[in-house]
Image (cartoon, rainbow, N blue to C red; front, side, top):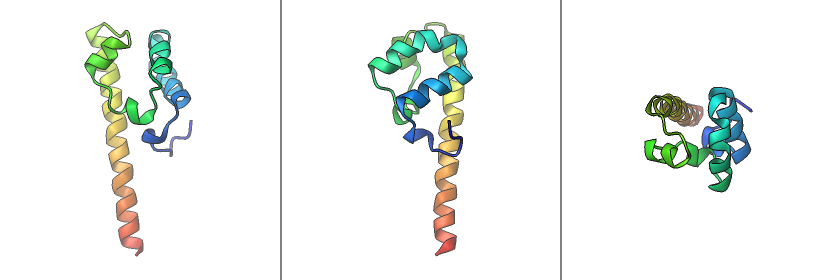
Length: 92
């Protein structure tokens, strides 16, 4: 997976790859739901606790671990967007 690529543009396969890398213990649980609901990078960034429950992650501690990593992805996405804006502004 390209680390420079924006999370919001990830395919379903790239989302599954991220889950496998970050939370290998949950890939079996999440695989079916991610495929069924066609969860791309944009949808991944919007997942909340109740979505994880619907996808089969019942344990609160496990949900919090995943949500923390999703927060980091959202922050990185925002940083990348701000960098793009600054780059465009200062290059004009």
